[in-house]
Amino acid sequence: MENLLKLKNEMEYVLFQKIIPFWLQNSIDQTYGGYLTGFDGNGQLNSDENKYIVTQTRMIWGFSYLSDIVPEDQKPRLLAAARQGVDFLLGHMWDSQYGGFVWKTDRQGNVLDSGKVIYGQSFAIYALSQYYINSGDQRGLEYAKKLFDLLQVYAVDTLNGGYYENLESGWSVSPGGKYAGNRKSLDIHMHLMEAFTTLYAAGKEEIHRRKLQETISIILRHMINVERGYGYNQFDLEFNRIPAINIHRTWNADRIAGEALQEPADTTSYGHNVEFSWLLDAAITETGESIERYLPIIKKLLDHSLSYGYDYKYGGVYRDGIATEPAAVKDKEWWQNFESLVGYANGYLRFKDEKYYEALEGTWNFIRNYFMNMDAGESMQMLSRKGETIVPDIGNPWKGIYHTGRALAETVTRIDKML
Image (cartoon, rainbow, N blue to C red; front, side, top):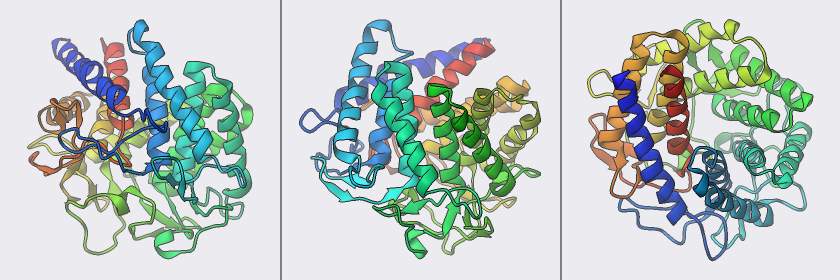
């Protein structure tokens, strides 16, 4: 009890006194609308950074979702921050000719890349649905549903199941190779599951529930080793596993590299596996289906991460490995570690096994001691295994309030249930 209270107090301090104030004070583009997300290790803004659909929508989601847990007098300010983000999103990133959201604009909102990457579309559905839930603004649900319908028309692979993930402006499938029109991934299908969960919560329409269940089924049948408890990375269109490559318009291609595998490999992401475990729990719960038949795979995903991906010496979670071999990439990124907080907390809540609490505490201690830049108010991007700084930036075109704010809010919610 004492340890849980200590964790809760520390996390709430970081969330309410650091992360939310940092983004609320610094990210809103008062000149052009939308959000500014490029901040170095000192919290200094790169004002020329372009605006990506991924981060613009994640910021909308974050301000919307977190408006429910801040003190009542702060709620209007967070919803106003979300609303102006929606204004920019619909005014500058919605493709009036073909529908859907473009991948990237400049700061002013001029389109730089009109590609229709399903990763970005999924976060638009997620953000707009959450915005509607928290604000009641009908535009949120209207555009979330409109985008969902476009995906069913243009992105569904009607032959093999699942979704084409990389498409161009007019919804034509991208070429192969680094443009990956001939690949599918656990990453994007997991985020579609996340998006459909929130869309169904927003509108309670049966078609959204059925598509959510379908996406869950595809992931578990094709993308997860349900016997061993880990996810595969990339697939061809027929769901045959293939070595993972860096794909255009992805974080793996854009990140400033730390350690890296020299050859393409069939890797698993420990952070994704733990993140998927709690997102799956939330998705099943939202559909109203019994969670019982899914508990074994949720537990196996957590146990695999503790066997191969968790650092028992220093705390925290490694980046990547090859199935049931020792971790291959041992540097540590913010998002895997923050998302693992929720997964381990959820595991402890579900299974009452102390090893999940110990992983939760160890991961949090590593985050608090090494990842968090307390002076600036946000997490750094990438550290070495021991916690030495590799990339000190606290914001970039992929990094906003989403992972850090969500993880702390979701973890505190679960600690409250434990208490």
